[in-house]
Image (cartoon, rainbow over all chains, first blue to last red; front, side):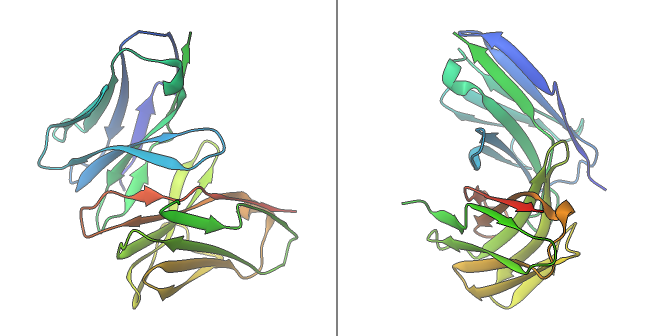
Length: 111
Length: 112
């Protein structure tokens, strides 16, 4: 059974810092991996989707990498801003488009 | 306008009541999903549908049923609600086998 772990569970940084969020998964036979952002009381916003054949994807200040062989993905956020404060969720496409989610990293960026 | 909408956004109901949560999408996607989110457990898949005639159980389907009324509509029913079904429920859509999933705003359900 695929299991997804995100470490740390919470992270607090000052504005302007570059940071890395980690995601690990137990079964390397994945279709894709998706990073989401969730604001309190709101739905999930898709940030990046990496297909299994890709190594990384970039969108603005965000860069996500994927290493299937080691069962890891990282989300790099450059020059963090208070507006980046949210919970970040990693989800692995485990087959037939079913996503298996981690429990998230709660990020707080202070001014 | 939002591409994936859910109604109601909040609902409080009593144990034993039947309740339906509705999801609509304007993205033209073929695949639709229902998830629930509980603190500390992450999101878990309840049901998914690849098209109108295809319905599949997810990880935690017991106590739930679904109906795909049209390509754009997917509803989730709790036939007899119980307190441990109190959670945040999300609908999601995607296109094709490797498509990105897009989520609705969620329905906060409380069963007393």
